[in-house]
Length: 164
Image 1 (cartoon, rainbow, N blue to C red):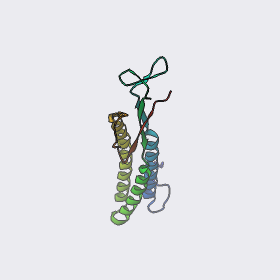
Image 2 (cartoon, rainbow, N blue to C red):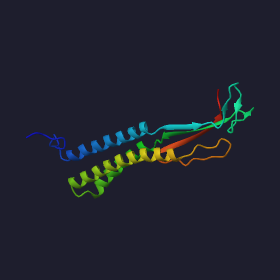
Image 3 (cartoon, one colour):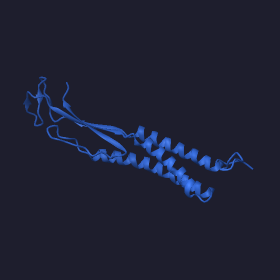
Image 4 (tube, rainbow, N blue to C red):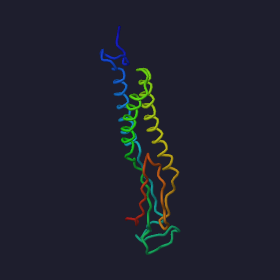
């Protein structure tokens, strides 16, 4: 009889639970790393510009001596996903110790936690990009604040003079 990936290769009691906990940790780490590398972006703009003589133009295209201000938004990941993974692993182990009736019950709890971590990471990536796409660029002459899709990502606002 061949051994499948889900069958323990040892006679150690609870080996199946340990294998599932290992899988939970791997799913958690991949979720944290994946969301860290996949959440990111930027957008920006400058109302105004530079004319053919090297002078500045305002938003209406009229010459001005004032250097136009540019605004940019930067989407970056929030560092809470690794914390969420650690909390989930500790929580499920505690829950198994307190409430699991048998090995099947413990495995079900671990599998559900792994699924939740993967779903939260995927949802976080999607929510971050949708939120970022819907966030308008600030007008450089006004006060502006951004509500970021916490806890998944952070949006930084930068308003600075146009560079040549």
